[in-house]
Length: 632
Image (cartoon, rainbow, N blue to C red; front, side):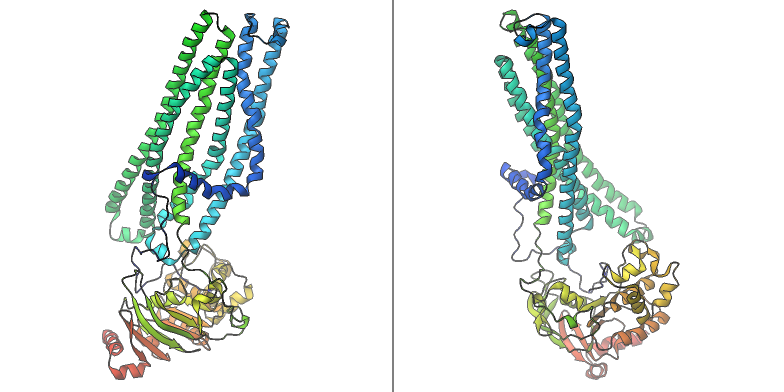
């Protein structure tokens, strides 16, 4: 298992942007400026697998739509019947007209109470079921996103700010969750209620029913227009929120530099500018959302006025009775209530579709480093969890690599490291030393050539097996929140005795036992309650417990004081026995005793040999060594 750090020093830093690999197709979902119904439908289809996983839980909420809608449509009809019964109008139902006024009114009141009871009993239950399913779907999407993101290559993280990723995994997923918990099923409920109300109105009085239905058409068109504008503004607002979070994360991560160089005011001004852009974009979403609500309020009043005007003329002309007119006044109010709720939920849908667009871009990011379809299985006795250590042979066969396709940082590297050999990589900053390590671990793929482990191309080996064969100790060992023991095991199944043995093997057990709770001492985020040297010591124990056949040290002792380094060096001498080792060191005095030194310059191997051989050739290595000795 690779014991690596996300914050390691890089001697050949990848650029902030990287061209996509040759087989990568950019996502077809574009910003909402080119939005279409076809795109929206395709986005919805992307969510269908998650809905399908919970389809059984959705059956009950969908069935509850029928009694809930009928209960609401029945209320205006019953109130109209009460008015007709009081006025002894012909519109009263025969069954009610045959009763006394008191008995008939009691039946109507009972019907109203029953309708209200149905809504009270079922509405909350349906809402709970819908939101429960919505949260389950949201959790599934969040899990899949996390698994996808953690499977992406390092090239993706080189060009993507962490803050933007966090926004997509939190804010965007939450917006998508609103689609399921309050939006999608709610819109179906509102549409079903509107259809039931329309049918009931046409059954009661077709002229007033057609008038109200006709008023719905321009209102619906206006709402759709405002929602389209809201969608565009919401996409822009989420992009600005991502930038805001990225800026915030960068300032918090680099707070020591911010304070040491007194950049608080300058960074605050930059943050204020980004914040203002976000507020400006958010104001547009608020405007279009408010425009929908205001439009519906006015239209609802106009609808009531229209019912009174047309209904009044029908009543005075003897073509309709007061009870029916009263029912339609209530219908006009109830018809626009679901439309108003529909508009609110449609806003949630639009925000959710915006989130789906952004999440779809992330999910469409290709996983460029994958296991072969039929990976070559390594013998079990060579894996890192075996008691037997078998050092591997590493061969770089004309390897070239670049973070950008037209800018190679490694050029035609061709060398072999024999089993059990200790090899050092040296060279000026930017020579490509750390890039070699990343290629060996398959954090990046080679651009040309191949890397062989025991005569097998590493692309034909499962990543788990490959990384079980080696352990890497970086200059800045990353620590997770949790206790010391778990930072050594990293979640793998090692016993406490194995943890203690690994600590003793690397001479770090004394330091650990001196901690307040020993191996159970809880470490804060990034191990801030330990010194840099102490964090590095845990990295050695983390590597030792895995018993790797290949050990890579990338400036591993740079953060240690002289006394601690001497103690660790003794442990390293034992740890390196019978193992293939690759050592990167800028202090050339620490690698004098390795078997072979590979000298790199601008991505090319220009010298190799032992220390004495390279000093005798008086080349680049000799120059670097003499300069260091002169400085000391």
